[in-house]
Image 1 (tube, rainbow, N blue to C red):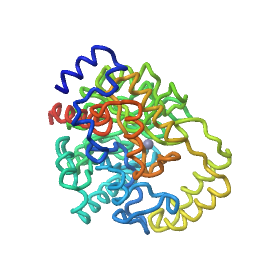
Image 2 (cartoon, protein in one colour; image 1 turned 180 degrees about the vertical axis):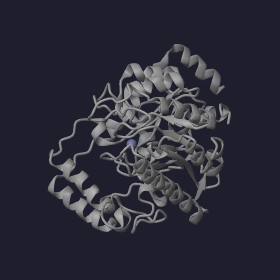
Image 3 (cartoon, helix red, strand yellow; image 1 turned 135 degrees about the vertical axis):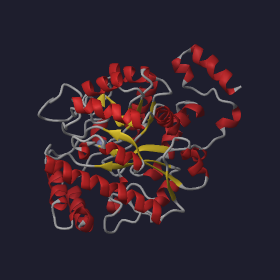
Image 4 (cartoon, protein in one colour; image 1 turned 60 degrees about the horizontal axis):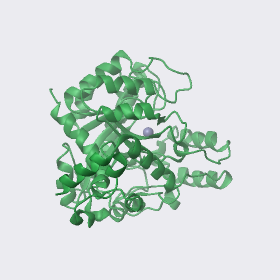
Length: 404
Ligand SMILES: [Zn+2]
């Protein structure tokens, strides 16, 4: 019944396919009933910081933490991809070795969270495990890599991370690396898209059964990856350039190509990518300087978290930050839906990695997204795809293509 209705609606056109056409019982599904996963949780960055405990409720207004167990429950967030993020450093053997040690440690920190809180979290290795884990009342922990820089020039290391549970790999971050051009490197392009090593990395990810993530990559790298990868590409936390011309956002023509190849964009909530902000230009350099100061201090961010928070609050007073609105996030979701269709849009809000807007500053606010989708007459079936179905379809395809 539901399928038949859906097909007849689809025949009428894309716009109509987005509106309600479900069987009545599925319309009764609440946000909590849906499997809700976010494809970009940067929370592993803060997991081992002094003063942070994921099993306790934190307050964004106090310590800027956006994800913890109580608020995940409150916001109906079942889990997602927990990111092993490594900042870009020099493309040298020394730089690679330092980055590799860092990435391995982030993976261990995720494992420790799952082990120490085994009643609340479970590591997920396959697409089908997410629903089972969520049904058991636990949070779903997939692992992903943001910035493959730690692999150096040895892509065999990707196998090690696969064995550690990683099921998604993002090639590049804010600067060009050995695999691909970044969308935001001030030096311009180094490779004209993907490097030869980047092509080899995508092939290895396909063989292993990992999703390939091109968020942060230059548009040319994205276009080449779409053509090269044997399974659809994900943009784990990106936006639409049609709404705001920023190099982190992707133009419509490329988003259409992504959809035609089966790929998915997961919409980001980093305010500076969503629209022009009204912030004192002196804020950003001081903000970056603050991070550098504590990252380079003895004990790093891990030991100096409290002092960092105090300094950040002082900076917020001196140069108040401007944030985009929940409606800006929704605009990017609606634009992607209209352009790409219901099978190619998801949620990757960059929590604890720069995400968050007015009205959506932590995961407890997530039901507002479902409410806004419903208010726009998006069907329950489509909302479920946005919250997890589309991303898990990509993981299922990656698993099926695994040859190694
Ligand atoms: Zn990012």
